[in-house]
Image (cartoon, rainbow, N blue to C red; front, top):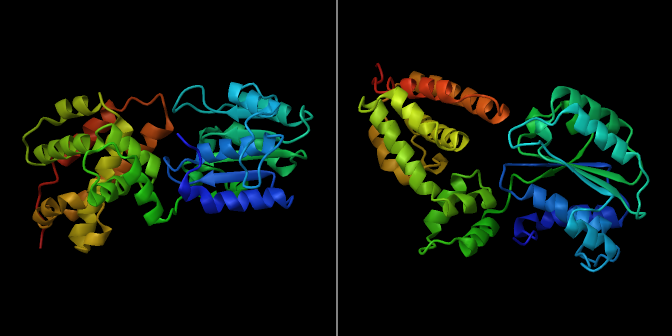
Length: 336
């Protein structure tokens, strides 16, 4: 995929100008929802800084020794720090190696560049160790912290980085890009908007959702929730079915549906609804569900999502059973 993504343009001009004017900070925090291309942006900027003959708009030459080494993944002045496995933590030993790397002299006379992705995967000891480096950064060293949940990072780390906010792309730009890249037969405008709604307006996540038949999978989930709330399904059996799927994704869809039910029950304001293709169901459910139970459900799902995404060792079966059981109790009508 081309790493020059159109919703990056303004941020790209910002960092490029800072570099060209010799005002580049020692640390950048790239934050926003997953699926915005933050890692691609960081890698692209690293290639520009290390290229021996970059062009005016930051395009690399592609022919110098640095470009070849980066393509081969063997550039001595570039380091990426990631968890050993998705969902695992970044331990302090990784940050200690990072610090040793940062104090070395650049072998090619340019920058020493480090990307930490995702930054929130650092455990507490690792984060504290990185903080010392941020307080006394070596010259010509650039740290880029990629974060999908910046609020999880230590406030002291956030305060020592220049922030690049990827969470507010221009809607017309991302809708046009997604429409052009969709592999659907019918590139319907409403389909594009729904995919973005379900992906926190993150185009790459929306594209992945379309290519993995996410809309159909979400529909199956909603149907199972409806059967649970009417007593047509055993919650333990349903939890076991959920547990064989992408649990984090299922929990995201549950959260969006629960929040939609709360929004519609309290305001009936359709523009706020994420799953607007199910507005008729929301209208029917409005006076059937207990609003207090919905808020309890929301809390349960938020905590479950936090545990599932924050701990690779968590076994979600018990959490899913609690959620499924709670769904069976949602059919109690409002008391007036």
